[in-house]
Length: 414
View (cartoon, rainbow, N blue to C red):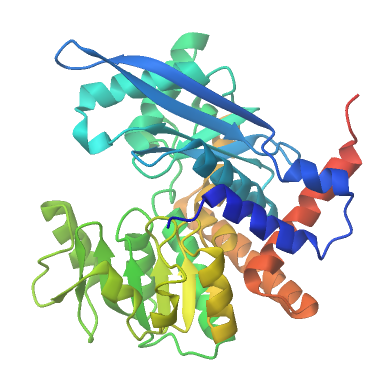
């Protein structure tokens, strides 16, 4: 049975909130989204027919600043999933000290089944529908599963056409030519790499030769893999939606990226053995990077996991039951709200650069990101030690405390 993501997010919140002395009414408020928008809109298809799509945009909190969160195009998009992802975005921004609240959006669709023209029609119409919430000071979308730079360019252009002038800061994750940021493409994967390096130090595992398996060799997993490999680790297995490849001596990740670009999958990479996603999760390794989708490790397969460290490059890849089991087993988990926060950190840099029309170099971006991720890791680790709790609970305690403090100091209007 698939775990309801919103129920899991609330369960995590309740566990962390028990360690905080916050007003019960404030806690009840933080368990709920601030606002939700559901839109049903028509799109003209290539054959002239009209198809109706459903989309969502959810704001969880705006206590720390404008809401921020990606847009997902996937058949499994649901309101409850969007609520959970928005809530996790709130905690992610708060734990890393980024002045944003959490949001998330998406459209129920299979983007690979649509032509480029149909995708553009869908994206521009969806952007128009959610423009009642979207603006550079209020709500700033970004890419997620099924979307990327191209879709962000369409959204920025649509919003700008409605206003009569270019508004680059209304979305992040844009192409460089129209105000995107250097370092953004690798940012989430780089954050996974940086927190993984800190976790290896914490567990006294030498990075040189450390065995790493990566589930989800895409926008997050591929950079996480090759950036970690370039620091001496051995990437022994990677997978995507079609399957995976395994080589105990290590895979050449940059070459594997080129193979995946040419063939649409990592499968068939020369010199490697095929491996299923299920088997990859059970490999004996030092680090398992989960960079695919949610609910990948459950109560059913958690006992088979043999990794010493789990890095959550995706949101919600462990169910609460699996989380509890693996913590008791002694697995060091880098929670999603910390581990994959590199994307929103560099999105913040992109937004600031767009507002100022002043840009930083890639080295400056990467160094600022390193400082944020390493600081966040150690703040969470110290709190986990102090409170004698697991890393996920510590990260949520830290985030909830910061959001609750902001709300208390702002007061309740009117």
